Length: 90
Image 1: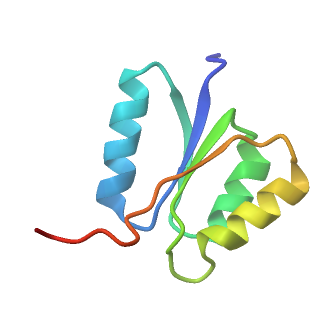
Image 2: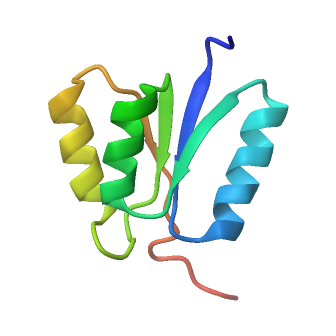
């Protein structure tokens, strides 16, 4: 089993696919994905990945909900926030 396991969390399927492709090509094993904060917490508890990529703006439960709950369960969790907040089209 790969020591670099990743949970990918984003409500946009296309972004999850892109992150998974990039991470896989860098040697990460994708162990799960989620489309909202509630799913993210559930998948984190299920898979206990090495790291999580986390979007902030998602339906139902947002990324801050997931961040708070994952850190409460595992203070050593490694979480990278990936968000398109504030991006503009030029």
